[in-house]
Length: 267
Image (cartoon, rainbow, N blue to C red; front, side, top):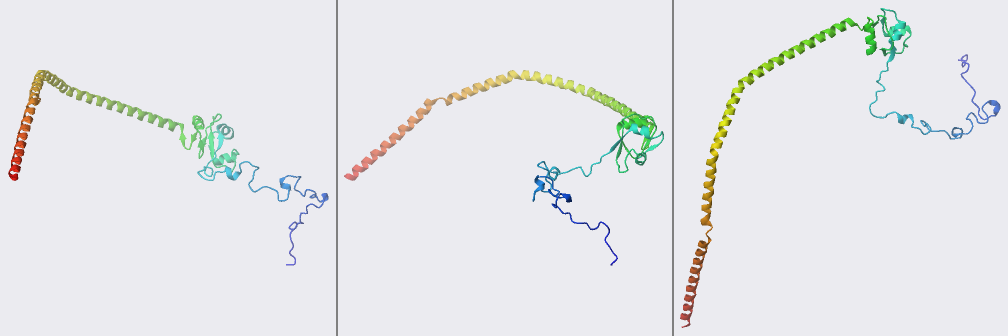
């Protein structure tokens, strides 16, 4: 234990401030000249950025952000492949790293179509843009086993299937038109008979019109004759006057009887 010592530089003297200019930390004591940070108790709070919007408020605190999940691809043009690779070689992520085109930390690489390509290359395990795909296939290369000849064959097969489908649709339309024409020819006599029936009904209605007019005139006459007795008010007056005369006579008889009864009582 007595032989154990501290390594060199483990202990250092305390930094003495304000002890004259010869020490290197005199006068302002390492705080600079004037200002908010040179005062005792000066300085700003943690996160303060001089009045501009601080970082902790600029960053979204709620909602969805794609930042943790986004993928940034490093673009490699076809012109660089033309310079770095020989004809017939395979282009992979490891090959790009070996050639020094991409750093070792890069994981996502995409081939772009800027420049010209005349060499036959095989691309495996990389994303390829539309322009780069066309140039690689035109030069005789392949992308993940995809060859221009296979693509042409599949395109021809798709075109043939489209033509066959169009022919089938035309044939179906022709059959449907024939069926519709046959149904219309069958239904045409019925239409003629229907038109004849409508003409006969129109004639009957024209024939029946005078009879209807006569019946209406007769009904109007009967109504006029029926209303005449009801408008005779003198008869009603005679009946009412007869009733009033009978009532006056009966009242007179009653009054005369009462007077005679009163005289008998007085006697």
